[in-house]
Image (cartoon, rainbow, N blue to C red; front, side):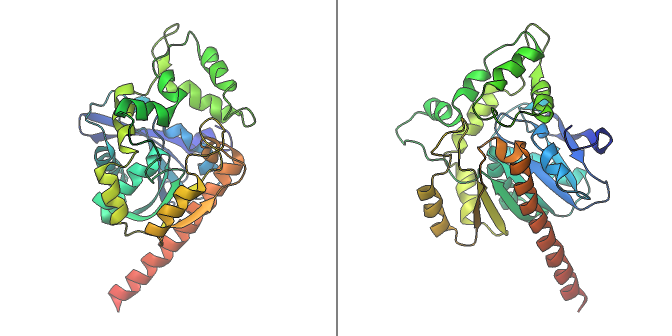
Length: 311
């Protein structure tokens, strides 16, 4: 994996409802720990570059229910279920509380995790996700899913005759034209399941469709935002899923939510899109810097709490 020694990467499973959740991790077992949560059609291999910019930190990242090697876990899906699965991961790794960083849909799941399991989260770093996505209200759920995901939704119904053909499919994707790397190839190879010549993306369309509905502003998300109690930073990308402008979150949408959530710190990344904000060196470095800041603040807060309890 680019920037991360192979010996630094481990994989295990965590029992959850209906089976086992696959979880990858990087960094020292005894280091400060961050929980990283991937996007709607992604996997835990979204995160190795971010991990590489967090030396001395253990980064743990699950394949969410319905994705990666957790793709056979049963529904129902939705942010509350993902939140409870993430709480099980936190418990399985013996953590009382942790910084949580979520990308895209992972940011939505992270917010609901913090709301449902308040004490398990010390702070949140949201990466181009977490706020309800602007969509036309007259769209049906299926239309909204396709509007939100674009070509990603169509890809889930495709098959590929080889790993090379899947790489070729992505190599021409506008989001990766200028940021192709061995890490992206590892990510893509892991995404495929089945046998050649009938390889297919691992994400369950049923899971993706069910979860995407909530990205418009599901009940659990709106509750989590209204009751937000954790230090939170939101980093947005200036370009969208197809490297386009406007991005997922135009400036007016951010301004509207900033007025509603004045305690949330907002930052705009530079020269990245929705994918490369975590899967390019520049983007990963910027995200890692925010995570480092959150870890530092979390450590100071824990120390102050300990002093209060001992007084």
